[in-house]
Image (cartoon, rainbow, N blue to C red; front, side):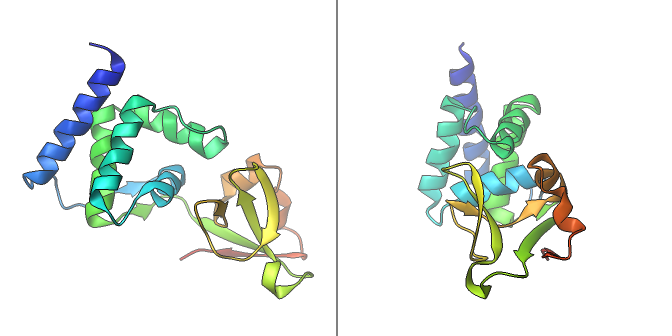
Length: 165
């Protein structure tokens, strides 16, 4: 059996357990990169979310940035059944993130466009509004900022770094 078929069967098994009410009601705690994938892919429409899970079975290696690579590694190394079950529990029960996230605001520029954003499509950082979207990320872990060469924002008087609640 190919890996894709095995992963698809794993998704279908988890969805079947979910439909029967056999998944626990726990609220999972996940790394920030899992939270980011979920934010970008969870839909109000359950059918669309389940479709996205089946897309993961077809291609678990998505994206090119650090967060996407970490998500793909998490998805495949921890056991596909368990990770898909975690994603479904996130959809059903909510979740918590195990790493603190921060917003970064530059103090000396326009109040309307002074938040650090990561443009996911252009793979660049820029300043814009605080609002998150599927195109722009505005909340970062310390590790993500350090890996991007932006660790100095924590020590500079030019920036206001706020922990997200």
